[in-house]
Image 1 (cartoon, helix red, strand yellow):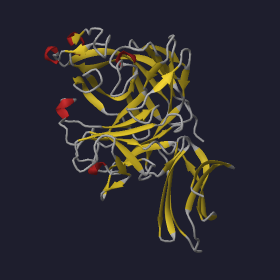
Image 2 (cartoon, helix red, strand yellow; image 1 turned 180 degrees about the vertical axis):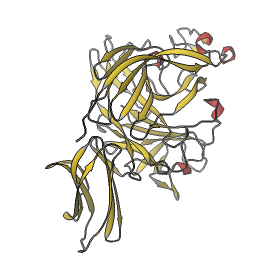
Image 3 (tube, rainbow, N blue to C red; image 1 turned 90 degrees about the horizontal axis):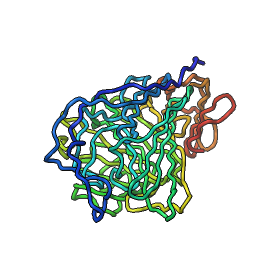
Image 4 (cartoon, helix red, strand yellow; image 1 turned 60 degrees about the vertical axis):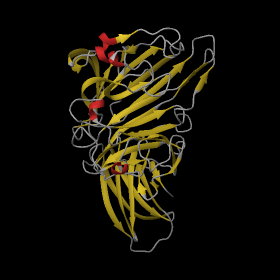
Length: 422
């Protein structure tokens, strides 16, 4: 087994080209539904120009995160150190758009926290307080609209390639308060700073609900689509998202969701308690012009992780109450996609005739055993070393005919750490 280093945490200034949105803020009155948050006078926005921000770097052998407290405590960068790829969309400019609940939103990239409303929230643009931890950072803010407090703890350990998110929302007020919380990950995964036609989505569900779309061949807002194939189009493939489209899981049916670019052989997995954090949303920009959010033609897609199933649903916190959960996100590479995952491993199982292709990527290094099964019976096993950036792949052809469903087990010693199927 390799020796592990990290995590290490440090602060460092970074410079980002930024439009002059701060000088164009317009105060609101009490009769404005977003009060006391500001509107934006787009005609007064100039730029872009270099601007310095505080940043917190968190790193271990496998990944590096860059958190920017000055921009809503977001994770601005997520690098897979085993492949060298930047996973989040890296917008070369911070540019205000006309999207969002306030009527404006900073198209920055990375992973933002949308709170206490849908559509990017109300407080994602402003500085959040933060505290350095030995293994990460905690960021937090108090919403001016409801008085609710929101915090997100972002952590690495020295052994795994995943980072852990721990959101916590609390109600210190004397009245019940309604809210939403969403983590919005803006991603690319390709060799360039844009999704490629080889991008695929992993969503273990059989139906989705449309949030919005410019595609007249699809149902309107609130309408249902079969997943992944609807009217002969396979929407697990990015290339089928021809116009802008946002969909919600109906609701989430499993503890994992993700995306994988077959061309770059790079993906990500989100592992979460789907009975608690019930929201999953995918959004692709389709044919919307990139000038709406950037200046260089780059593009991205969004994977949203929410507490509620849709943007039309709200949670209510009673006075003194709070809600919290933990989820984990990790890079997956070198296995040609996957169809099952937990926090320990992502598995690709592709039966073909009487044989099957098997691939496993793990979130930590193991001297493990991979077992292929069919109908509950073992077909083949491999003893192998697997680690982030060092996946396992093989093809098995059965010599004895077995009937029934295929399955894969991954063992670390005698312990089963991942099991797909029977």
